[in-house]
Image (cartoon, rainbow, N blue to C red; front, side):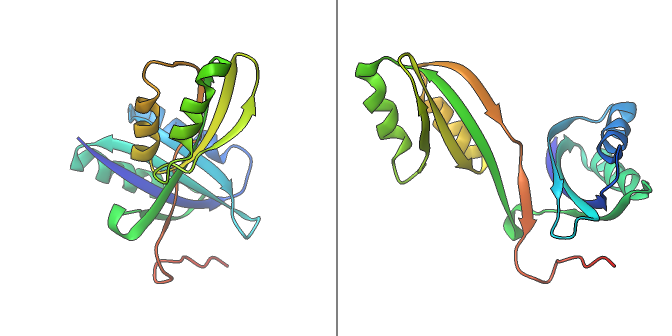
Length: 168
């Protein structure tokens, strides 16, 4: 099993995300992560999809997604030529005497996380980075109770200007 990150430029119309996710559902393909947002041109939406499968399945996904009416462009974001980021909000149960331990982990140069909320029994940490960075941070919280966790999924762009798609 391999993972691929697909970046789609699609028409910004109602139901476009539903049609794309429906294709995955009908075919039994797995979506590990999906993010969508309007681009600099409000006529288009950028969708980033992370999926996995063998080479044949991943090629089939790319071909079938490219055939959808709303899809204007599809690219595979290769790790060596792309930048991926994800946002995580992590609510941790922590007593006042243990807060400094969480703050120390969050503020290390490896993570540069922010404490965005503190209350009597818990705190919320905001962290951005690649999936490995977020997974590592979460593993360091072993021994603390994670009350809630929200992850955005991957957003990504290709490096440089050679791979930019210009749509009319």
